Structure formats: C-alpha cells, structure tokens
Image (cartoon, rainbow, N blue to C red; front, side, top):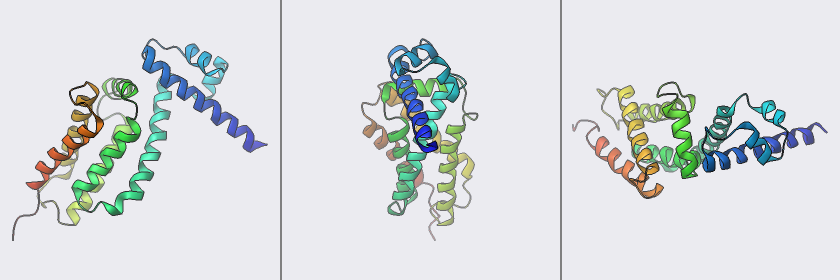
Length: 200
C-alpha cells in the first residue's frame, strides 16, 4: 500500500514538473504562477507546496534529476574515454544532452539558475566545475598536464569555455548542439596541445 501511495506522489510531482517546463517555456518563468501550474497538472494548489516551496524549486528538482542521469551515463562510458580531451568532451556533451535537452527551456534555466544566482553560488553549476576539476587532477597524475599548471585556474577556464559556447548556442550564434560540442572540443584541443608535459 505504501509503495502505491509513493508511486502516486511521484506521478503528481512529475506532472507538476512537466507542466512547469511547458508553461515556463510558453509563457516565461515570471509570467507563470503556481496556480497556472497546478491547473494544468490537474492537482490542487496545495499539492504543489507538498513538493516545492516556490517556483524556483521546480528548476532545482529538474536539475537534480537530470544530473543523476548524466552522471550515470558518464560512469558507463568513462572507460572508453582515455585522454583528458575525450573525458571532458564526454562530460560536457552529456551535460548538454540531459540538462539542456530542450533549447527554449534551457534559456529559462540559464537565466534563472545562473544569471540571477551568479557564478559560484549555484550548486548545480558547482557540481560540473568539481567534475571538471576531478578529471583534470587525474590527467595531471597521468602526465597529460604539466606539473606547473594551476588546476583550479584551468578548471575555471574549461568551465568558462563550456558556458560561453552554450550561451552562444542558446542565443542562436551557433546553430546546433552538435556544433556547440565541436566548437568546445576544438578550443579545448587548442588549449591542451600547449599544456602537455615538456619534451624530455
């Protein structure tokens, strides 16, 4: 009985999420009310507050769900990515695939979760930055990066490249997500070709 009750709760939460995504994309985040969401999802207004304190929490729930999916896919494919370029590309492509699946909704996410909160205080943003840092640290241990390179600065550089080209894609300066990944790969390759170990 408890299992069925929990399943129904999760179904309601998912309905609220999907309706929120639809309305945020169609009407805009500010223009969408909690009542709009609950009416569209076919649940009582109080049901929304059983799951979320405010509209922004729906975005956090979405990000948390998609991060779990992206982490799982990265773990499954990581052994096939041997170089630091391959690993960073896997990380960035998978993040784009899950988090930024819907381009119009992605614009809402970037505006509400990055621009308004600010770099350095967004938990989901920090998860990606930490993952980049971990891959760079492992690459340094494998001898792919010079000992003298400061990994914190390099992680911030990689993150900035990812962020810049993602925004270019969202704003239409890059036509497709695939082209966005290709641009990021090209710039990272340029960076890392000059960051390898000194010739003996």
